[in-house]
Amino acid sequence: QVQLVESGGGLVQPGGSLRLSCAASGSISRFITMGWYRQVPGKQRDLVAGILSSGSTNYADSVKGRFTISRDNAKNTVYLQMNSLKPEDTAVYYCNARLSMMAGTSYWGQGTQVTVSS
Image (cartoon, rainbow, N blue to C red):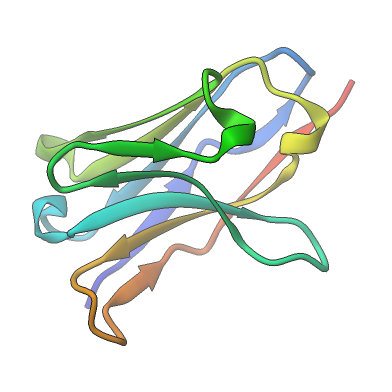
């Protein structure tokens, strides 16, 4: 079974930075893709950033140039570095990992709250 544990959320002022971590149980090299999503109450969960097993990355337009996704295979951890944070970045951030394109092989962490406010 895959377990994902997020950490690093919190309260930060506009313009500040946070780094989220997603620690996986076992090797992350087995995942075809990992990513960070975010969700605010009453809205759908949206992709923020993703990283493929090849190392290729993709970002939502709203975070390009501010957020960076990376991974450390030795630590089985994926990170999301968030800079120049804005109030509209406030959300619960979830880590996702996918073993394959088959149904039932996508896994989620419990989420971590990020609040950007002065």
